Length: 115
Image (cartoon, rainbow, N blue to C red; front, top):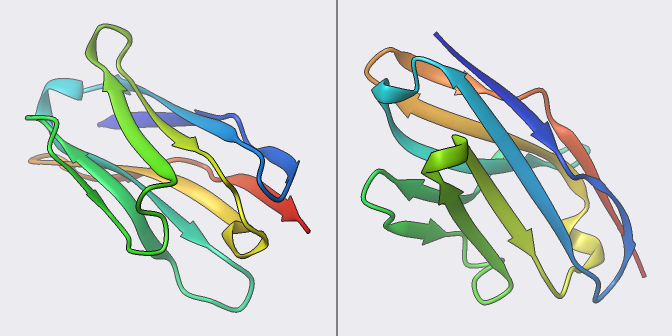
C-alpha cells in the first residue's frame, strides 16, 4: 500500500505561481510513475503531468512550458511547479502514483486562479 498526502494549493491571481507537493509513504519501492491530474467543476479528471522512475516527463498540451513536474527521491516527494497560471487552471489537483501494487490517489487540493 502507498499513501499520498498533498499540500500547496490555494488562490492566486492570473500570472502567479504555486507549487504543489505530494509526499509518499508505504511501499514506495513499488512505484513506477507519479503524476498530477486535475478536475474542474463539471469536467472529468484530466492528466496534467507525469514523471517516471527514470525521470522522463510528460505534459498535457495545455500546461507545456508553464508547469514542471519533479521528484525528490530522498524525501519521497514529488512536485508540480505551476507558473503563469490562468483562470482555466482552476481545479482540484490530485497526485497519483502507479506501480505493481496498484494505483493510488492523494486527497486533492484546490487551486483557484482569479482574473
